[in-house]
Image (cartoon, rainbow, N blue to C red):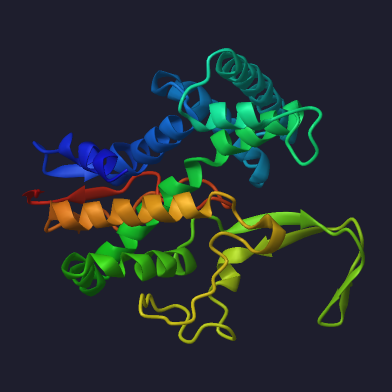
Length: 294
């Protein structure tokens, strides 16, 4: 993964400005999830379109009808399902050294405790859909935050090991996922208010991670926080299954950017943001720099 990050930056060697989103934060996790799963990189544009359609289903409807969103998502699911079925069939006939092959070889309709065909298909759809989208935001939000806090950026350049707690603070301070919805399975009483069974509950994860009752001085970016139990990856049974990979990708990406971009600075602040409420991150993040270091 470190090599992939360096290769992405090497492609910018003759430039003095780059878009962190298009030139780095997006290509890197797409390559990682493609290689991990065994999806041909030349097919990336196909599942990017499908993922975009699916993301709209978790967003408040804006400028289009709910029916249009559902129809687009339905088409995406059908096409993605057909595509993944083809990958499963190919790996069953000729396994490779990838995650799809490993899952295919471990599934059985008969053995208890193992995934059946439908569960395998659903799991792979989730991995494809969630394998890169939020990580793009994590990397971009992290670099934007560092550029707005040059003292922290300078410390990270001197001490790359502090990237672990820096990324944790980014996940608290500027998380990639701001909102999720859940449906109550029973009546729940919270602070004297009863939420009835079957109600839709909107969870403001980003707000919870800046709760002043939980975090001292919550609006301050502080990688030295010693008690940083944030909601960046959710919590409980809905905790993000891809959290370890996303953490690793973000840590490697930020260290590579800080190490190799000499005198990086924002071209536009604030940058333009994507028109999304649930998944929050810049649509573009233009950065100027003197040159690319080794």
